Image (tube, rainbow, N blue to C red; front, side, top):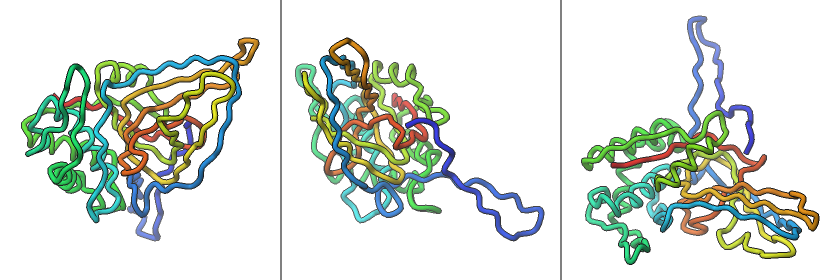
Length: 272
């Protein structure tokens, strides 16, 4: 996910000379007009040794997904995941619902209920999803989540974590260390199953699940794996984002930071 040319387009119509075209904001969606699976790419990385560094938010994120007939709902789902994460501290965030219990330091998230679905429905409205285009803009995601949180008597702040389509590693690392999730907006992406990448010797064999379209996820971890040959030379490096996908299947996984996709925007979210 290196820098790509901007995907937003301006369309010039045959209007009077005083007309000034404006850029149409990118929208993020997982239904029609949104992220769709393309293919699986089998990958094998031979190695003699490897280094594996990972930091993540303890307990992870709730595994919510859209259960309604509404379309292009990835942004409201991501917002609900953030709410569910913070609801374990501020129980009023999702009404008539306790998102998690913490037992001996372990976070146990409750299964999704009608209360979570109701929160998603409110976010769908406050985020203006599908109002003018299929999906939700970044600005409407932020403003809609802020409106919801304020209505519940809490405050919210955002810190930019992706700029010019590049991850700001220092911000992301500090966010994860401080247990703040990061709302990320991607255009095309490669997803790797959480159970992959566990080989101890020989070769790392896994599938890259490739998607197209625009999607919103919640990042809660960073991982870098470096592979070395028998002479100690670095032969391959994987830079990964641990995310809650918002899908009913593959609800968590790793997004590979590579040339296939693009990190469009992202914000650390703190609710207090």
